[in-house]
Image (cartoon, rainbow, N blue to C red; front, side, top):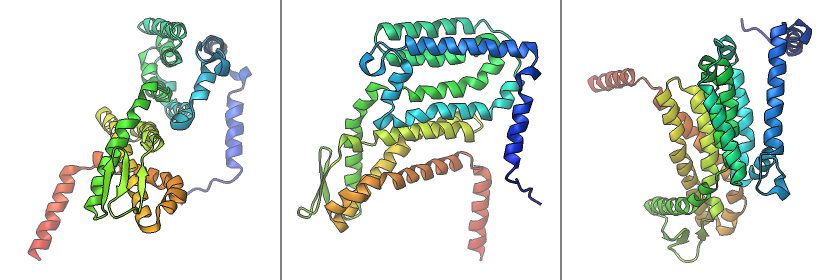
Length: 329
């Protein structure tokens, strides 16, 4: 019989959790450790909040966190969710972290120093992205220094995942090649389906009169879906795969998955224009087609996940037996 969680159970569990973590019930060593980390966290926060940014001071002042907030828009809007995802990853690994052997490891000291140097160089060079990398490295290297590798290894992904939240300017230069590639493939697929189109640069034009003409703008290059899919598949790969090579394989597949999803979107917009007119295609369908296309990306992600975990010898044996059975009948 499946147990039923009554409505008052979550409240009771929360009260139990709060009662178990009352300050007065903690040991003196635990109180000192919490106080120490409160001081360290406050120092790190004020360092990067008051002296973390020397660029665009008019909008972000001197805060690295304010600067990140101003950059997490447009193609990088997904960035604001990645710290929450890292916290979720920490929560899922809370038992392993709590059970880890804690012993100071001085190999973390050079990494702490490197993190502070990166921050200093970032402020000096007016490059908040370098300071952001220094902050992430500091968040990982401090526990490594104080508690050792046995604990720090569980923090590698939650900390490393935050690097995807750093907005990088050079990625914007990818819009032009992405547009050209997407339009070239879309034109080939559409002509293969019998819908005559020709391509000029990043534009797609009807081969049968003036039925439609599209220019794939930089906003439609697929960069936004590429970045968002990279972040999503990175987290899913860490969560779903058990071996390191499968984690990396699924994560690296995020690039072709995002490109394929964007090509599907362009193809569907052109097909909608051919059947319902360009005005209809550029209206509601163009504005909201990103949502079903993102679902296509998720479906491809799940398919790749299934293929990575498929037992190929058993699948081949099953397929061979079915073929022999059908041939004999």
